Image (tube, rainbow, N blue to C red; front, side, top):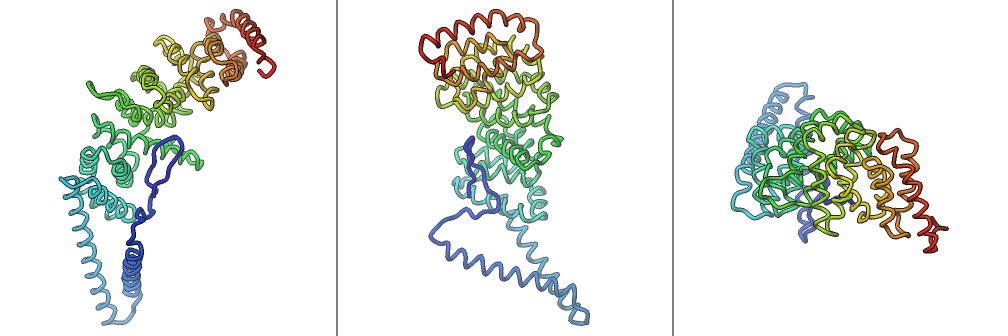
Length: 387
């Protein structure tokens, strides 16, 4: 029942059976019997509305109303019992089962969603997730339950309630990323029409910063950078909001944390550079701010370490922040056979046709000489024909 993506953790696939236990045959038989009873109840409701002759119409109608009232009452008792008992001293698996049941009921029933909310479900789910941070499936289940209850507003509220709890913040961040990605891939308006976008951006930024004394969570930073990129993409005003609230500093700190973590944090480095690419694309003011914050050293290091699939983005970002000389710095340090040389040349060609700050334009004469030097070194190594 898990749907995996190459670039991130797994997320629950709604409405799919989650068990592959030996009792599948028994479960299937019970499910078939339950479906049969529900079909009979549905037929009875249809009949009670279409019967025309008394006293049968009244008798069937009263019996049907009593039956529905009884079913509704017992369902609400079950929902209340699940909410009151979840998150106590029970195991992770039992708490997970309860959240899974509540999510499935809520997904299929509007009245169930109302019962859960009336019983304080948002607070309860957040508390349960905070109590079982080591259970990834429970974190995902709780996050999607919150989304079913309140949509994107619910995810924003979960981020707000989970300050100081990185595992819950990470689960909420990945849910935001997944929603934004799927809506974009389906050609929907998606995040463009999210009225909560500005609030979510600020909350994700808070999650990136963490709490004083907390160790750095690389996976949380990865999730936040990924979600923020999709929220800010093609929305310069949101990028400005992010930067004005300290987002440039937080993103550079995330990249430094990824560099310090070594090879295990390559996904964070990719997401961080992609976020910076989104921020500086056509925004000279943000590029200038990043340069003033010392972003060049960080980006040069990333340019030498990131996998080839994002070399083009890295070089383009480097060029917008630091000009052609920053691109050449990476090209000169990279192995001749690496993608950095090809990507660097492509980025420089694009930059040559762009209106740049005067200080960056002044780099062109020096860059021409550096390119000649680079070509001579490559010729000496026998690699110039390919490049």
